[in-house]
Length: 67
Image (cartoon, rainbow, N blue to C red; front, top):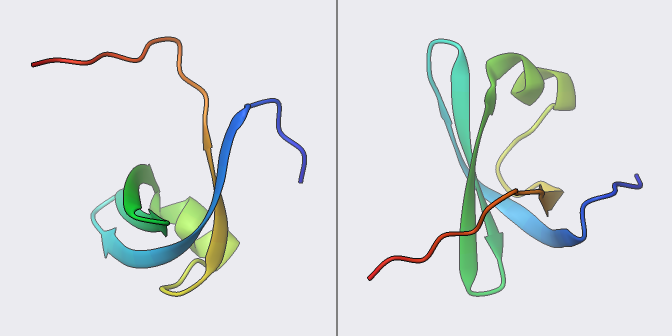
């Protein structure tokens, strides 16, 4: 799969929390963990499950830091 996003990380699904229409998918990339909110339909269409190898792509217009 080719994407235009430059920030791409290979990781492993560690947790999927399903809700009414949305799901939170936690992906471990090295020492970091990313959480993505995606639709339940996407989880089912991709057949996502814990321990799957996935690509995390981040395309943002802003990155904020607070202290």
